[in-house]
Length: 467
Image 1: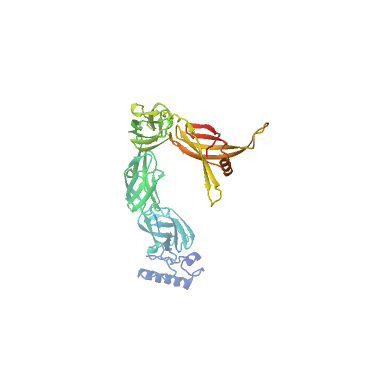
Image 2: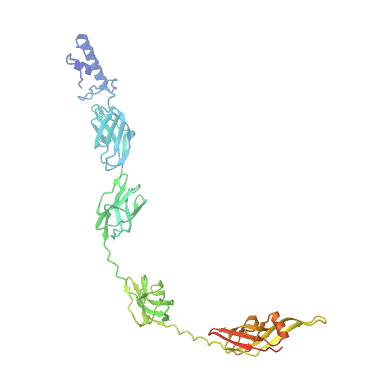
């Protein structure tokens, strides 16, 4: 066992022993040698070194300064992905001159001593829980729970089912594997899934996006992205185009005819009528139509003439014409002939005068009317008017006779065919007085009869009225 003791009186060796940097001579030299011997005995016996002494690299009893070995008190964050690359701040003491930072037995990807108490490092790849240690020329930090760093496993994809689907996407896929908790992305090749849901740490339900060929299905979590393998492959399949739609067919129509003005509701029966885009009666589109089912359409006929074929058009084409789709337009019936014009005649007339008796006084004329019997060949509405001409004075030898004209009516009544109807014309009171005094007056009555066949007129002159 050797000790580092002064071999000469150089200041450098004296400083290493913690004594003043001045030459060692005589008694001083002897005292230093004795001190060194004492320290050697204490170290050999397992006694702790005094403060300020540390072992030398030359042997177990070598003396070095204690308290400069680094210590790790905190690692933040204390977890990260197995792929490494996590930025970690290491807090502790005596980091000056650090020569290594290790995660378990693996050196950090990089590190930088920012102060005697802080190191910024980047985790290497690793697994499980490891101790983060710092090494300086004075030694390596002791391990403790404060320096632990846990590697979080990245997800793995073990199975994709089903593992194929159409290029259009939309296939529901179940992804089986490990470490799916907190998944942030699911990709098919380089395309994100249409949607996905983490159902458990080992299962994800996803929907494939559009794509082509064979791709890897990967899962990404904060810890990283699953490695690609044959187990995660998904193959996009090009689907065969759907067969062309079948052409429509018309097997019957009901009713099979209607007026030329259109407006007939027609039920068309056939096959492959779904998705109809047009219904035609000959060359004219239906006024309207409704697809009831693949075998039935209700349509309204447009205006038209003659016999036409009713056809239906869909994406599959236009129905072929046949006798079963024939629709006949019927011409409207001719209008009925106009009714004959009513011919009406008037029969002789008689006059009634009403008088009011009051005591022994002369009866006073109060009212009167002229009655006419009207007969018509057809039902009609008869309207009668009269003109009573009263002569005034004697007729002069020269000039015209003076007259007074009274208007009678009009009176309107309905006359049945061939039935004589009595029609009364009221007379003015002064005319009645005149007629009562003199029975010679001229009356002209005009008859106007109206029915659907037209209007007829005739008249009659009565020169004498018998009271």
